[in-house]
Length: 490
Image 1 (cartoon, rainbow, N blue to C red):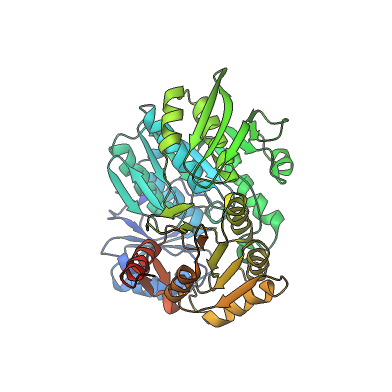
Image 2: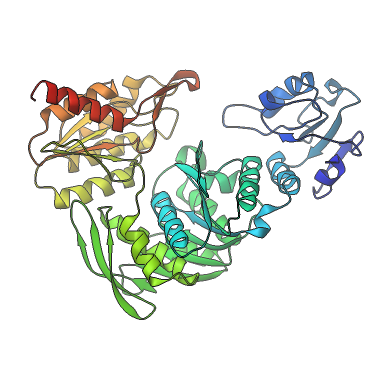
């Protein structure tokens, strides 16, 4: 592709050099640069893209895109074209869209945003649309899926270049719809810049990512950006932030929830340890919905999915069938170990989601609730104390352990959690090694007890110092420990 085509949609640019040259591809990772590539210097949380310009030049990049007055252009050879822009992330999004032929124009995009519930809601929408005969891809926290492909996700919303590439692959595979989890980071960092969504969902808002957004007002404002890119909004009317959000957006709006004032609601809600059941009107017919994901929040996620898919003329049979069979990895996932106690894996990694899973579990538990959790390093430190208090208050016993410590000392993170649990009368034990923590919980479990392994969910690794990842799949760990207990007749 000729470089001129890539840069002609950029605004307020300053070009040094020739744009009438053939380029191979676009990259923002200098390690992937090959001769004749364009290198776009974007800034990450810990690194400055400009620091990798020399590496890109050594690998014979043909063009460097950087922000104005951020770099000494005298260090760049004359034969290399330099494009200076106001914002390299927006430039990357625009160039990627052009490079891949604007694939979103051939797709109907559905966005899902919110602190919790994004993944389950996206799975539900995807499954209903597929059951309705609509070829649907999904982009999200756990996997990016389309046709028979399942690609493990590295973040909730891909960088704009990776996103456009993925959308192009979905178009080529014949997809008609794409359901996308859209994080506040993606909105703030322009990863979804230029996309248009036919419908977007707001699930809820609670404290998370305040290390990035600083305030809840900023966090809500980031979420609201999705609805500036949407034709229709499906909003959880029961959420405390719903009124504020609806005042901030200008697209068409429908609400869902369990309050009588919403547009879409459920009645006769029944929740137990293995499923939820409720009744609601779909296309003027009173239907009974059954979903094998326990918890009150499942009702909200299902209402959002039903609302979206009803607007897209999904068939009633497809809605009932898809919701009856939906499975979401790491979301209230029961591990089959053939024991008198239960082990449930859940991605609850913030105060609101931990409180939700523990509250839901306590409601139907016949025995004790044992919670095993830690908190991620190099992330919001304020939530640690809050989560300690929540587990101490709601669980019958807590095992404080590690999550993804990253570059922080694991024991320091655990002590921050302990500070919160000490405010309660909750019983607890601290075990740094997560496998040993799970082993301890399983050994003290009695008949009918429920062990909640919170925080890791679908993840199959632990992230240690210097971005080192080690394999750690809680399903494998639990099953192996169960086998060891069987061998020892425990």
